[in-house]
Image: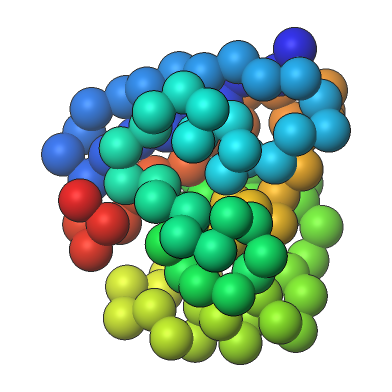
Length: 106
């Protein structure tokens, strides 16, 4: 099963394991990761699962959809490697993924 490391803006790391096919958001919610509220439940209708993907991993992800990019436009802390983790599905190729939650999601 793939693992994901969530790094809070404080520097605290939380490592979770989830089955392939589960979204990074669902893995976070199921494991109580702070900073991932997922208010819309994964419908790409809010930005409360905003993460900044580590540069070593960003190019391995499929590109953001237009809907995801539009939703990220509403985030004041958007970075070039920002994604909504409800839109990232875990695969074995993403085992070890590292993401950071922004300070605005404390």
